[in-house]
Image 1 (cartoon, helix red, strand yellow):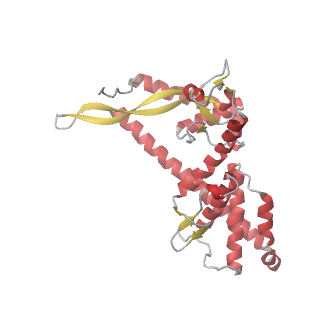
Image 2 (cartoon, one colour):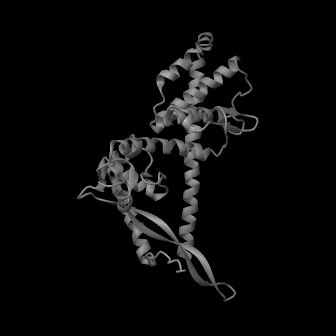
Image 3 (cartoon, helix red, strand yellow):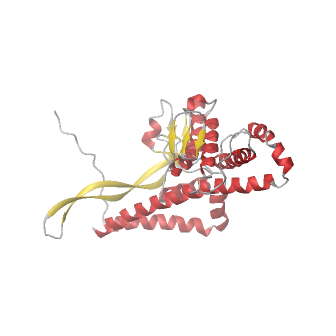
Length: 313
């Protein structure tokens, strides 16, 4: 039996690591110097950068670098390595002359150090590395099915990120939210006509969850047929529509309109009801979005802590 060979990688020294950080800093400064372009980077329709092969969202500084690259080049915000592109099938390749973008990743390795007692010990640490990725806009030979899959995946990843960052327990069953136990029930995505329909429904239930007393603290005690129940459904439906728009999902406005018809009675009785519901729906959707931003900031702090530890070695 042959021993498993460890994958080798380049270990950058401290000066080389600092050069990586400086290169990235220079890129960001250059982007910021174009004030209007910098503004459009964040106000455009571009979705979160993701890896087209694995489906994972990029995070940390890579999110910023790829947002800038996507806006500057006007390309899709889905990225892939040269090797991953070759794995997409015969005939798929990176266009000749395409420019790759640099991103970074942290490689874990073991380092021998001397502890306070003067003894040798092994400690796990990280080193920063460059990687190169291409936008899926740089690919040739994709089938129509692959193109459509990439377009769907991009918006679904952003919706899934909002869901994951809320951290609610998910149980199997018909779509619903249980305030007393603070969990959501959802069937498998295959039970829906499309993944867009699955995620818009999931975001509806997630919006209900913002009404919990530890979040936005709305009136959640209403039962079916009661005005308070109808108001909460209206809030969740509007919030789901707002979130779907942000993620680029097809929220099927026609269906939203048909739901709204059942609440006309409430709206006629209270001319301010739609204003109140819209305000609370905005608070609900903002809570979900801001929570996701907060979670990303916490993940970034952990990554920065890892980098500081690396410099201390």
